[in-house]
Image (cartoon, rainbow, N blue to C red; front, side, top):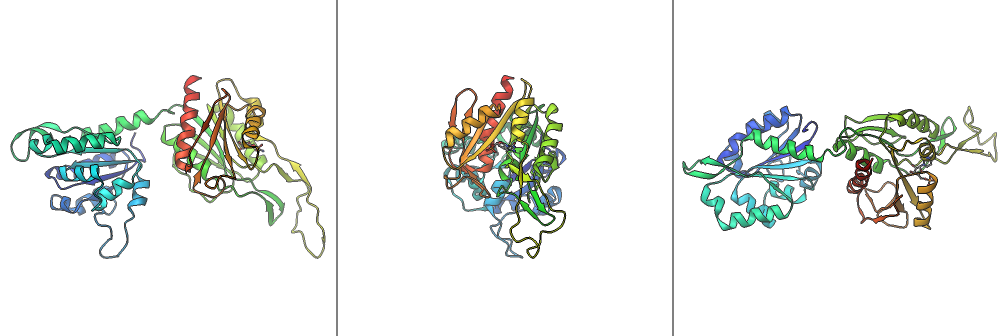
Length: 402
Ligand code: C5P
């Protein structure tokens, strides 16, 4: 469950910090990538060197790395993380998290992170039951954070009661259980097209479009994160595959994309057609470079490309779910609904170039989903990663009904 997951382990200044060596070891053993962030006080309890050795990454503690002057971006760290684990979480850090006191790297990263947060408190029993701790933990729960309740037992003060940080094995188990619950596409195979296609005019020139592939790649990453087997058929893009478990097939032309999709289609439970496929290709591709001196007014003759979505719509079985995209500039709703029907899709994701945060090359998107059940789901302008989550939520519902 933790294989390939990016985990930030936030260590604060409590005696249970010594158990974080084991916790780091177990997380790495389970296949996670671990980035340790320590509060300044945590370093009194355990050496950063121990944790950087076990995690294989330099430990971050300050906003700047003293010897290089490098700024540690809490925003980038927050976005990198699939989960944040604060263990041990002292009363002080819990209070800072609850109230937004961002005076160290860990709390600042916590405030920037979008990933699920797990808090494993560790403190003396009286601190644990103080109304301020109880209230702060309730606040964290109200933010959607997961509290890994401390165990009862002998505490560092030799008093006996509730306040012992949960054992590293159980913290790892809590994470595994959480990610298992998120794997709602496990056992499903999702085929995704992404990016533009490129159609040659001559050996050096081509017809294409502005698609960056970001939306399709975000969808591939999200499906993979939720446990699906993903085949990503990508046109020429300069993007890294979001997860090494994704089976990526690189193609150039619409015909190549069509052939790759039709070959993979029988194994797919769902197909997301996100690529901006060129509608036409050049019928008279020149074998050699077209020369200005020889050809004054060259005529490029175009011939239609296969409509991959339509071909998929015709070939699809009743148990397969298909999703299309419609990028419109006018008459948005009617155009999108027309495509939903013509291409025999289960739902279509429409975006309009008239919306400032939507469309090619940008990091954000604003979409409206039209379903074959007559629903219209309007979304806010969000990052393409967040839009991908919303689209996959709708897809998952369709798959669960099949
Ligand atoms: O007809 P239009 O190109 O606007 O339809 C967009 C939808 O159809 C998208 O889902 C796109 O990926 C898909 N499509 C396709 N093959 C084409 C053209 C569009 O799969 N040749």
